[in-house]
Image 1 (cartoon, rainbow, N blue to C red):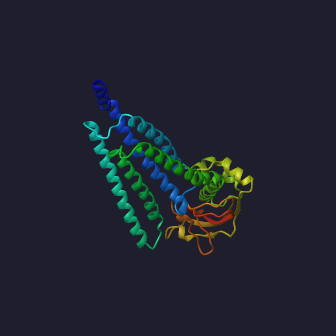
Image 2 (cartoon, rainbow, N blue to C red):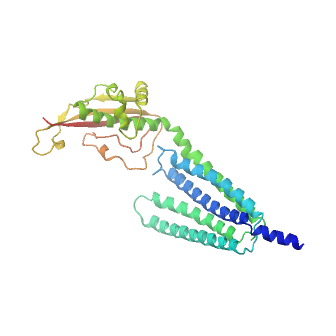
Image 3 (tube, helix red, strand yellow):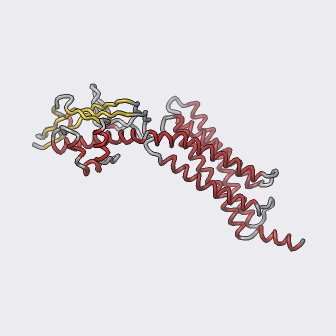
Length: 336
């Protein structure tokens, strides 16, 4: 009996056990951060204000991180639970105290964030999407870090606590992943062609502006722009000439030059300059299959329109399904 007792004590304080303990706490803490990140992206998608369906990276990063971290967390927790003792001593106790303090502080910090965000939500008269996201994410952090703190400090608080902890965390991750796939991922896949079309229209307007500044006239056809692959690659978002040609051939993009007669543009010339400047007017149209929400970033300032609705660039605001036309201008400046 003495030998078995001594063997268990040695086993509980081996370097392998210490490493498992540290990894268990660290992986669970990181998994909670990944869950919170997923919650932020999903919340932005649900409230529909700042979700950018133009890129799948935000949700993809969250899903990838969670799928990687959860199995490591569960496996390390399962292995460590076989050796874990309620009363920890030595370096094991130090690790427990350090992580318990960190997780407890994270819980308190998240709770403070909930209160501040709730107060801001009540007092604000403007856009409250940021406060809503902060409340949702902070509440999740409060609940999960409080659970993790209890797991670290009192692992044997009741029978099978550690098993229930692993099961509950896994269910939370599954729900978050399901929401992520059903919502943002599905939308990103569904609107892929429409997003490519919007990027093509933006790129096309930039290319036409550059063409006018170089050739001092509007292109008669889109072919004069699409054949210049170097020109297209110089803009963001970059769209290949093949993509543009395909969209034009299918009738998804249409171009109408000289929708108004060109006019002199003295606003584009320095005072007392002998140079000449002229403004041209044209129209770009795109046929969208799905609605698109506004990007994360603001509407481009070059899309500001005049009294007749003409602007310098394609607005990156919300787009409704159907034919969307943009009345655009392009100017050149030439020394006489």
